[in-house]
Length: 406
Ligand SMILES: [Zn+2]
Image (cartoon, rainbow, N blue to C red):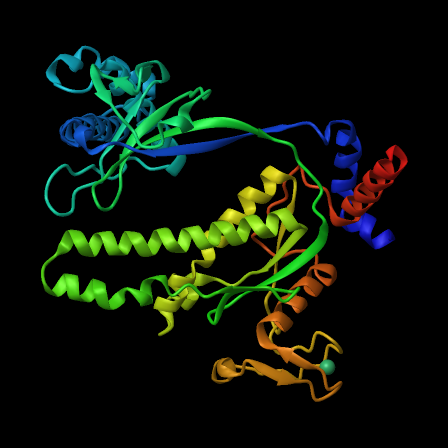
């Protein structure tokens, strides 16, 4: 217990401070993404190059100011760019001054964020063109009956009912890889952090199964791309570029959907989620690249971390070393080792004789590793998460309260 207190020292203090507010709703941002009906595409396609021109002007001007022939450097802010672009809206057919100011603000923010003297130019034409993007201020987009009104033009979107009772602070239109347009609106929603029924779970990320949990659950490796690879190849040979793009998008959507379902299940079920520090960028360079990218490890980790922090859970990253070759029962190094042994799916420990499933055993070891080694790089501590020791106490308190009420 002393060790526990030491390890979670800063956590415990913070939890004690916040113990009165732990059941209050936390406000998070979620981006609504609604597909725009295709009748508005010509307008949006015409507006996108105008946005690119403003962006490129901001980029060029900022670069010149940062690299002057004489005198000191200047880093232009959104305010400076607004002054420089004042009155330019009359030269544009589609976009107005509000959109221009939003572009300037976005440019200045991103340039500062990436610490660059200039960013990438937006290309309007050719096969290499940048996907369209049109930002706007909250007051520019208005509801009008069944449609939305923006810059003197009516838009209709699919799933309109999702906008009911929603207020937005900003927003943008965005084009996807196929060329379809989406309306994106970050909206606030509140979620009450809860205590999950399960204490902790280890997750082994692999190729055979995208992920296996220490409780024996598995997410089948998505062969989302591999399954339609042939269809994509056929379409490309026939020169059907648009169809090929659609197929790629379908694979991506299926992968994302499966990962969303899996990560939601984990976050609903467990208080503490422990993943290995496997780096997908390293494995992409080997001949297993396609399987690795198809597995979508990075996406699963991202989803877990933001869903966990919204629900008041904790995600931990531990070193993966020896997790598949250690016996989770007796801790002897009797399991399969090395790349050649990747095909071994089940094995029997030579010391204690327990039969192991390779991935589940590794997941159990990952869960165990979180207890012995506190952390490795890549860990993010979120202030609203209760450590598992605290969580179990809170859970007990809550169940006894329920019993007392009953
Ligand atoms: Zn053993």
